[in-house]
Image (cartoon, rainbow, N blue to C red):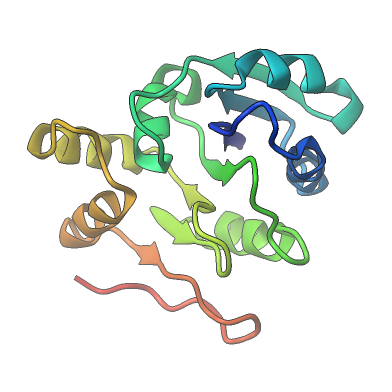
Length: 174
């Protein structure tokens, strides 16, 4: 499994949050991290380096044309390959980490799983690439993640929405 971190922030962004995001990713056993660079590319590269101090290896990916997980997935497709992955914004912490969600995703393997809480944290199988391609064709401005999730649901793929902690995920039905 890989992690795709969306780094679109300014050079003044609080890097300690990005560091904690990388630690939360490493805590669930994900060691292959791609960081989609934004306007603060040099600052991020200097602060994170090769990722070893966080327990991960980092690959830096080119900036997206527009922000958001849908466009980041499109940009990182070659690097992601057929691997399952989690998207995670650089400036968002999931309270308690992503361990419970990662375990649920690994055991159930829905096409997509939305992490409860902050926006932008999703688990995906490689089915998402077909969805991004389909949505991209219909929206030349770039794929919105809500459209990607809707397309997946319309195709009968299992999309597990965010659910309050302890209530268990329930699939979105087409």
